Length: 478
Ligand code: SAH
Image (cartoon, rainbow, N blue to C red; front, side):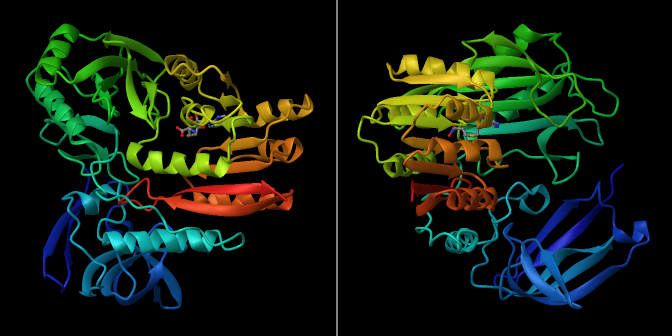
């Protein structure tokens, strides 16, 4: 049985008592580990790049989640090895920027980190983060924020299990743990997804369908992944199960579809491994075509269960619009769309380019990209499966040319193989889209050292309520 402790936050602004239960499975109370658990009064002096409050205590810098600059607060400090772990206990003097987090699970979930910050303060925090990381290059433009910074995620992911009363629950793992917090509504997700998950929970409570138990290896349903086409309204439901034997399949499909006629396809994905990776390799379509379609920047895209598709489509349109503007296309250029996913950026760019070459590691995404170019009648784009770095090395070795490279690597950023090939291919412009400005700054440094100049940086808020910052940078050859 996991230990839980009650937590009370008080702000003197509205004097609300935000009683929360914090999940402590992986970090039991300090006393039980024979560690010192101290209460300290601190003043917050700034924020980390992850939105945690910085406060000095006994000559050390504490990082306190949910604490804001200027605030005075009581915190619980626990020594964990060489480090001090700090938790907010009570805000004594609250900042103007503090707001009541609208989500009841905010303090225990960990999926969002900034709900206690006003939208203006979130914009300021993100701007400051990107400004400071990009200081060696140039001052970024003002960040493009979202008018309604909730309900935006088009993809939801729910983990199933049972509570101590052996009732079926579904929700998210509490941060850094494998304990599920039951969640009925996640405010940054499309509400439709939560409604479908509720139906599935009800179905399980009234049938023999069992959630998978990580400890015993028994049971069936591990996760449910839902993808929503925000423009098309099409919905994909993927059941991730521990076994391919789906007893009661027809009844399940019939019941869930009857409650949600908006579901256009349902799949069974089998994941037998003991892993934190959600999707397994085996996939079976239960009904529909196994993919959904959505419209982005005026083009239609087919999305499969495994392929990457931007999770905030309205902000993506702003991001891509800026990326294409930065590419300065005149209809003649050869454009490389590296780390292209299902081909979205490249296909949007193809209208204004001579030719587009896309490269992507995930084979399902490449298939989607090829289908997507046909579906949109694009004749000047080719997509290849492979490592972007290796692909570029080969292109450079063959002496091929490209005027523009658009790159959108994962959080870990690009690699030396890729960047050194860019330096060899010498495109006139590089447009670097990134969901992690830390690795973007690292890679920009390499490109600047190898003949490029950073001309413009545009941050976009793709992930409101979280500390993540997306940004697109334009580089030209010196
Ligand atoms: N440009 C796309 C996808 C960006 S996400 C979009 O906007 O939707 C990053 C993509 O890089 C993912 O699709 C991932 O599968 C792919 N990827 C990760 N490592 C890669 C590598 N080494 N070479 C090529 N693609 C890679």
